[in-house]
Amino acid sequence: MKPAPFKYSAPESVSETLALLREYGQDGKLLAGGQSLVPLLNMRLARPSVIVDLNAVRELSYIKEDNGEVIIGAMTRQRDAELSPVIRRKLPLLAEALGYVGHPQIRNRGTIGGSIAHADPSAELPAVAAALGAKMVVRGPKGRRVFEPEKFFLALLTTALGPDELLVEVRFPAHQKMGTAFLEVARRHGDYALAGVAATLSRDGDAIKDCRLAFTGVGPGPVRIAEAEAAVIGNRLTPQVLDEVRKIVTDRLDPDSDVHASVEYRKQVGGVLAARALRLAGERAAGTR
Amino acid sequence: MNSRKPKPPQLVEKKAIRVQVNDREYTGNVDVRKTLVDFIREDLALTGTHVGCEHGVCGACTIILNGRAVRSCLMFAVQADGLEIKTVEGLGTPEHLHPIQEAFRDHHGLQCGFCTPGFLMTALAFLSETPDPSKDQIREVLAGNLCRCTGYQGIVDAVEDAATRLKTGTRKRGNAGSAAGAKPLMR
Image: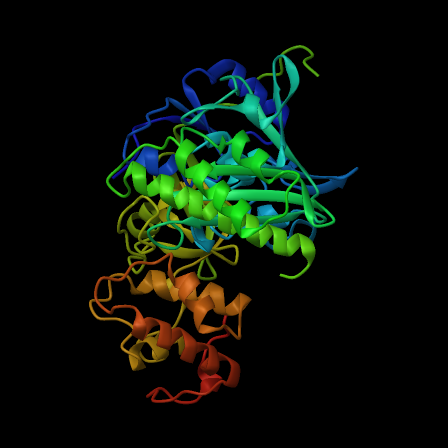
């Protein structure tokens, strides 16, 4: 099995990459870690005429801290992020979610930017970005654009990135003082999620001041349910409140069915995971877990 | 930032590459669409690395690239230019098995053997990062490799025992002399 023929270039800088995209962006495809793209090429489900390989663009691989944000270069390997002390300390939700991304062999090649730009509906990182309100920084002929998750993830496998644009970094707010949790149910460890959730909250005494839930595997992109978040904010995380959240989530989720899981199953699992993740996040915020 | 258009780099369909495989240097002139596993098997004639699913699920093609376990079916050979690769041929020989290979043999960690090169390379990278693993850690890392014969229990036992052998330099039922003859784990 081989991909259909393509022409190839491995630029060494962002400006070279943008020059290539200007010329070939329409029929070309950016190759980051390749853990989603190469299977599509091997099976000839994707047949781009040009591959622009980002693996020699060293300037896109970094983890920096700036003013309450942790900034991750798009070509940073998932495994490097997962093992980074800065990320483990300041972005615990991302570190936890990365453990669910494929297997170590996949994360050794897969990149933070690649997963977010690919926007697979069952992927973990878009949900993390949505839960944290991460900012996607994009460069292209129109210069630099910065997207909130709601404006970036547009539809199934579709983002706001133009064919001549490049995701250069993702800026995550440091959240070591919040309680967070990532949970998912998959058929086997490392498989794409049948349903998963990223939960964040902050406490004001016993009450919850702020809360976000972002689901994966249950819609075309990361899914948030405002009503479920509202049911938490201002309340304590009592069993009644958690049960209420579970019911709202199960009621409101609108997933597709496939050979692996029915609509009803995904709705049910989404609700249960939301309640569990909130409880865990609450315990972590209180320092009891 | 968008001053006058810089010339985009050239597009190519073939490229000359140079790779270090099991401490030996190889060169090749490859089609850019050739996957790394096909290059290793067809161009370098190192057929110990197996091709299974060719989309990153089964783990049979796992190799060590610059010290890390990766799927060689999910990379193109051109991307390995200038990098260091270790394949199963770089472990032991039939007369002097690597301690991980010995442990697989002793614990029935293989039957048909098709998946074994991938498991061995996964275990090699894992044990060099995690010399003292728990059973849960072993199960988690092995989840990236599929085996249809063993039921996995023998493989988990083998990796657990391999960790001990590598740490203590002991060989349990080995037929091949002292641990002093064993190759270093990596590098």
